[in-house]
Length: 277
Image (cartoon, rainbow, N blue to C red; front, side):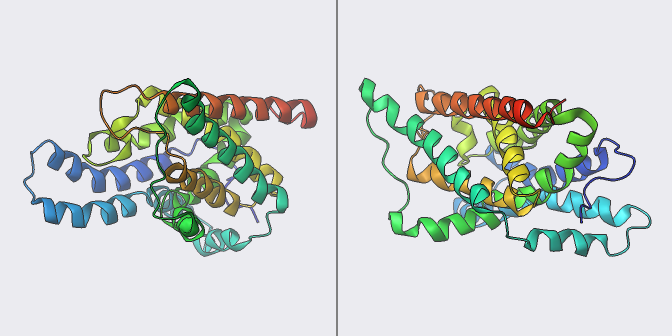
């Protein structure tokens, strides 16, 4: 049952507005703290930052549930919507390809600069044996939860209205802009990234995630899984030097590879399925 595409196919503006309001209202106080507008002790700040940032990242889910609840004639649609994420029968391709593609691109970005004299960035996890539990955390709390809204709700509407190319470009840009407050929060990884490069990364991810959803039989859980995989590889093969105002070659290799892979996959989809407008 696909609850994400309404009959009118209208642009999901209400979804985006609620998503941004929920997340930005929760994140903005930490921006103000970072700029010393709101005073807070370091101890309290370190205690509050991660849980509040995580709750804010549920904005896309809140946006989807709000719209489904508000739509007339959709009694119980929120519960039915959440139930479709319990379908884990994605098929082996949808489970393996994210590991190969996203793991491979992250490895190349992490390792390639060493061939030109760059110092290796060491794994940030305490042990590789914690990768599986860390992956589960990333799927449900560390980024994957965003996919209840992005790929679960918004993407089918946008693809129906604009086709796969424009839909994923639009969603990728909006997705990047939603993260914008994190560039002004002390301690976030985004402060070490170029925002333009991050936007290209989100567009590349959007193309890849859309394809994985397609090969999973349009099962929304594929978004949570793929997003979790993408984020879980980052501390295993770090692509960021956690210092400001230093060259981030790995980041740019990562961004470029992700975008090229996403574009290539979408061209492949068009040639083989003739489904892309």
